[in-house]
Image 1 (cartoon, rainbow, N blue to C red):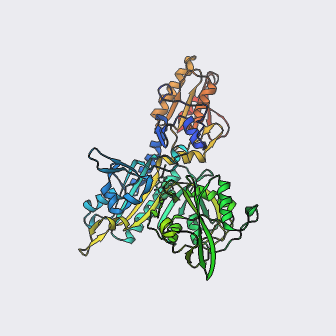
Image 2: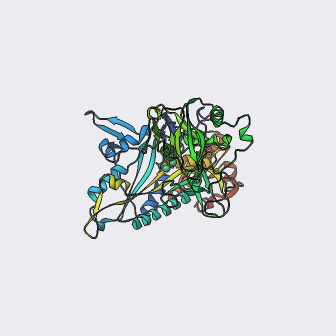
Image 3: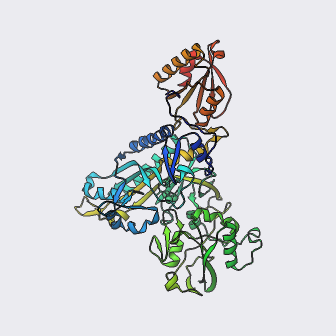
Length: 567
Ligand code: ATP
Ligand code: MG
Ligand code: MG
Ligand code: MG
């Protein structure tokens, strides 16, 4: 490709709303263009990057024996009603009606559709195992779309679903996906960590998240450098030995001991108002303990709310499961308060986050309510899980060394669904003994479009993006200085470009009539990993200049060797 033919539109300034470097750089490099909140067009240059990521994903999925299909984005409500998720998925799901007033949604995920396919297509154990995947646009009406394509509303996901005859088979399918994901992120050149992520099946291998390590990440990970232990913080807390933690003196500055005051102080530090405080009395080991559940005004994902932890000392924020357990609610509902189960953020009818300040012992206490009409305001509470608070330096739950904390961006998530969906949708196959059995299912997601932003978060400098060869829009830029002035430069550049293309090098020839400085700046901003510069001066000696985007010395190489060098 020649820049004279490529739609390239770089910007000096990033939009003021862009907070993250990756978002700023993606807009400045002209990879993406905003249409509306959480809605982005992938411009031609960005599309090349997205396609490269997709192709690596496809390659490894195919190598792992998965088969590509494409399901509709629009899904009938009836399927979601079968699993109960029509009601439970919450406001993240975009619901739409057709001209006949029938209910549909724009798919936020595809478990229901694929299970519907499996129950009619897969009849016998002889057809199993099966793993099918698609690369497709999803829509989730995120509470707060932000950071560009990192947390968009419409985004590209690779989602795969496996069907096995039994649990042992599922574990094999799951293992293959674990390996495929590791290969994908390694080939993309990302620094990543697979972390255990399943609080539901503690100690099991029920779910792993693939996290790209980056300070800008929304997730907090706990890992033990001396062992294999790595988990997201929720799980690490659930597994950690119970250590009642005294509030650090610094965190308690200016705050009197009563816990209600702590709640208010934290809310103030977060700059949010308190909607309502509910006082509960818990019986902990026979002792009555007071604690408070606070409804915060405004939108707050759990991870954001967690940031306030730092100032809270023994103050801690409840996970969805814990709050559900306290208020005895079915998944997805918390009485008048809705739970955004997917984000594990906790929101009330008008996006009010819930945080709870409870400190209690290992035994699940019974609650007595003081001051609150629970039948009316909230369902009767019953129990609460153990509350801990993992910090760096805590012993690793596996007993091997100490925990470190770091931040990550979730780029992939694999999950053993077991028979949750096959039972709900009565999806069975005929087993070897002639009896119908439910499929053992797994689901495996990759945030294809998020990967591009995550990769940039890991690799940039003051001049712009630094792509790895695997996902760069072009592997090599040939900058022809004086292409429009010098016949020698034009001839040499055209020939080198043709030779590189013939040799299979993914090359961009910068043949614009621009100042060399702005050509270099553009090639650097868009992150092309290698650059060769052709100019009159060097050509007189038969030389061109090579420089790597990631840094290092400029090298002079013979024009005649340029193709073999680039290969
Ligand atoms: P998150 O915790 O970031 O909201 P999730 O756990 O809701 O993600 P999954 O349901 O596990 O997401 O979906 C699979 C993958 O899709 C995620 O690992 C992530 O990489 C990607 N993804 C999810 N939501 C978004 C989004 N709003 N924008 C871009 N990518 C997303
Ligand atoms: Mg997540
Ligand atoms: Mg989510
Ligand atoms: Mg996830």
